[in-house]
Length: 462
Ligand SMILES: [Zn+2]
Ligand SMILES: [Zn+2]
Image (cartoon, rainbow, N blue to C red):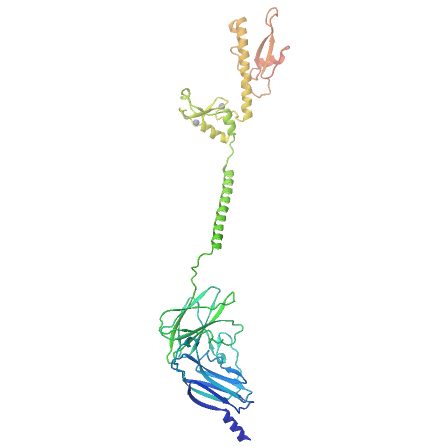
């Protein structure tokens, strides 16, 4: 029993060297209760490196391969399997699409194929940015707007990632004279536990090309930020090669969109209008605040004290406000109380107070009217007096005239300021009565008493 088991174990294990470009072997009589590990170790890759070696294990028409083979190092590939007694092993070198047109490609590889019993391998899911077996490797981050030069081992993948916002970015790669493959995929770090395969998106960067290669990023549906994983493969089978990567925002020299232009112009116009409205409003407010209402209405000044041109007769007079002599061509105003001032002097004065600078006669319209009325009465009285004087002069000796009668001082005193006495002075009383006027002001008490006492005296109040 023990002997048989040993034989089956020997049959199921092998370690063979091959030099070929393609291999297919059937392996039967495996123990379906055991787990096995099949390893491919390439000791010499094809000379031109235009293909990628691949180990496949076909079990019941299902193909298994090392999902990490192209993520780490293509020359070591491992496939675990169990629960089967019959497998097909395939080793080939897959031509990259980029090199499809190349002719006479020698795909011959030198490799070891080993199969051993192994414990069931449970691959641990790795958390981004870790990867590889036992999650021992981690992906390097490339900051945007930076240039990074990376050294990559021969026939080896190198991984980097970058986190970009929603702007458009370009990746520039300078690989000098080395042949490189680059593959960029957008990556969802929540779902990803292992690196995705890069073979589908592989872009081969020409050797003998010193120019910068510009590579566009694949579009993502992520609106906020996206993680991109950049895989770089050094096709050189013998040497470390360097490659420089730069990630920059795309130039945005596009024409300014029309709607934005219109919006901008609208905002500017609206701003200007708003500014003008505010300016007008403040101007009006300022005017209101700064306007001083003059003490005397300008209309009253114009109506009762219109400005007149200084004439030669006035040239010796002075203005009582500024004490400067009037000059020809200047304008003056005359108050109802017969005082003369420069037009401007009176304007300035009446801004503060509504009276005459000399006699303090009120200059408000009602005060002026009152003064005019008084003047009129006085004029009438003077006229009457003149008539009476004429009569007196006729009848009496000149000494009896009223020439020296004091002028009526009219004021708003409570006293009667005048009275009339009708007298018939003729001997036969045949003439019409004569009217004599008295000054009844407090200063002329005699006349005043006479006014009060006389019987038959007709009093009149002004
Ligand atoms: Zn003056
Ligand atoms: Zn006056």
